[in-house]
Length: 97
Image (cartoon, rainbow, N blue to C red; front, side, top):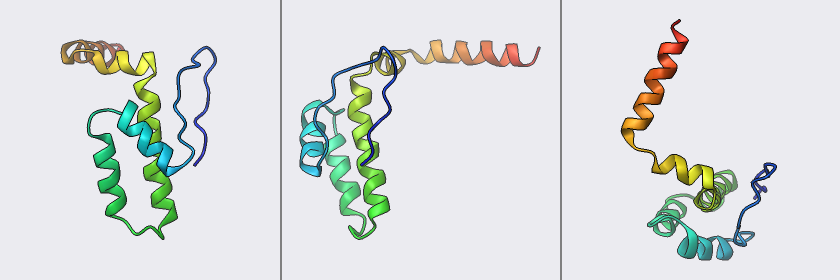
């Protein structure tokens, strides 16, 4: 598993996730609802000899835990559909000028 890049000024909480056991614990404790069950289902659906796929799955779920504690990510998730639509309309209008 590779470490996620750090961005200046965004040091945040990150539970230990160096092993599958630690990742499972982090998903159970700090993940989004259902993450742990989805993680287990995805791992169950692949051959464990496919190390590339195992790595992709573990990195994706590790990233989900990190997103959960990113103020910017959580603010983006909390935006209303109307707010996002308005921003997209504004950007499209600017791009066509």
